[in-house]
Length: 404
Length: 191
Image 1 (cartoon, chains in turn purple, blue):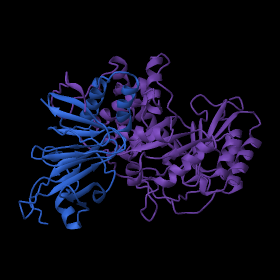
Image 2 (image 1 turned 45 degrees about the vertical axis):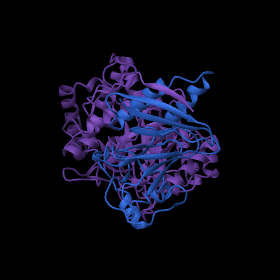
Image 3 (image 1 turned 60 degrees about the vertical axis):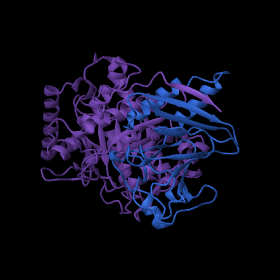
Image 4 (image 1 turned 30 degrees about the vertical axis):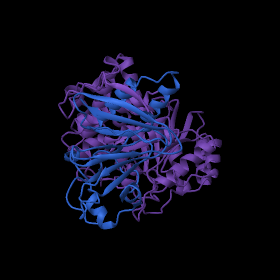
């Protein structure tokens, strides 16, 4: 293998998720992250090793993104990240394109943060679940208070300083009744890039409000309506899931199924504040498993990323993920457009990586693709799902105007 | 004031409350109005309801701003009184998504009332305030006063974008409009 180039079935690194601290200043009800009250912080020498390993292991091909996450990143000061960015740059002798990103609850954003975001060209993601009546149901402080007002203050601060950002919204069962209200919220706060995460079953979050019998139909109706709203010329919104599906359809599967980073060893590396690291789904790090003990592959202080792949536990995890991927390939009609389901969802929903369909993929992949296809085939029509009330509504010709 | 059984007021299923009930309801005789007491609110207002509330209670809802704005865009795009068809279709789509029980055949009337003029009432299944100012529905109380010679009235205040879906038994005595701006009322009637 030529130094500096990834092996055929490993990497290249696309996403490096680093946990600067497990601590979060709020306490969302659906959060899967453990130890959110811990104030531990990643040590500079551990961070140094992380970047050293990344480049020494020959995992970089072109570029990758560093995502600061898995605790609220802004509880540490901008100076921490400035030093981290500079540290990464010192190790980047090959001149790879390294993008830094963080996902924040936005409650701590101020002018100094905006300065940092601008100077270091940080990609900012804000977690907000829509208008207050939706957001504050789940995204609360530890004393049970809503956080919406603080979040929108952070959003307005970003706008005031001209900092672009995208939003991630977690959809719960309640959210599905409110596509218009969600759209109005995004429009009101000039949010034009949105990712819609379904409430997932992961780790300590052993139940999702979306685990209901009628959820596919409800999600289809929600997404169909939101699709149309997001294409309104008044305030168009780029929706990650819908745009991604559209791109896949346009591409027509000519290049084979998309490369799924979550099933490719070392395409995603997650590192916690103590130097423990894992690969595949980022959510796996820190979670426990009756089959594997935990999902940590080792510590950066002890072993390189690439060398860790040789350990029996890692081989077992990789083999089970690969087996599950093959089952998806053999059995799922959506595989050409999906490329294989997220391992963490398979494990925590089905009890095994060697499994197939999950709630996550039914909603996040199948319904998304179905809705986009439906819209392309029948523009202007409602999604092809039987309405819950079998009632034929005729609304004409009586659209009259009366003046008094 | 003695309130007995009858329909109640509620937030429509799949809609959230924009304002608390004490701010939306008033009791009176038509000349003088007061805020309901806690006991009266307990009788007048239903808690969280299911789809059986449609047709049983006065279900208060709110249309999204883009729907309300559509009316004003139609007005701005035409010198003559605009065709309310696009608004009707957009509302029907919205209502279908929200599973509001639109009659199989219905008409949509946009009623404009200049400021200071009395508003026409008529019968309707549902109405929406498309204007910028508050409008109020004055209904005969669902609950009879102890003295039938003094009928109790309930005033439901609807801000911009808010609407009410009425049960068959609800009697709208009048509609109070703003003195400051034209009142724009979307009335949905079954045919």
